[in-house]
Length: 102
Image (cartoon, rainbow, N blue to C red; front, side, top):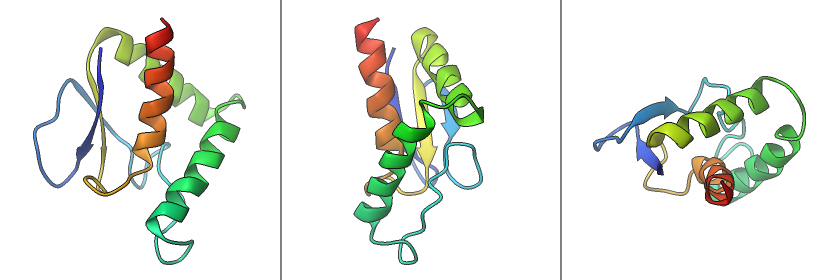
C-alpha cells in the first residue's frame, strides 16, 4: 500500500487519514520561529523521531499502528504544512522503508 502526505487545508486524501499535527501523538513539538526555521524544526523532529522509535511508549505504538494500517490500505498523513516541508515526511520515509522490506 502507499503512504501519502496531505494538507489539512486542501485536497482529496487517499485511504485512511491520520492527523499528525498539533495536538496529536505524532506532532512536531518544535515551533517555527520559536525553535528555528522550518528546516531546523523538521530536522529536530527527525532526531527525536529516531530516538522515540527505539523506546517503548505511546509514540512507538502509534508508529507501529500506522505500519500495520499501511500494510492493509493506503494511508494519508495529514498536517497543516503541506506543500511546505513537513515533519510527516520523516514518518513517511520510515514507514516506506519498512513496507518495502516486507
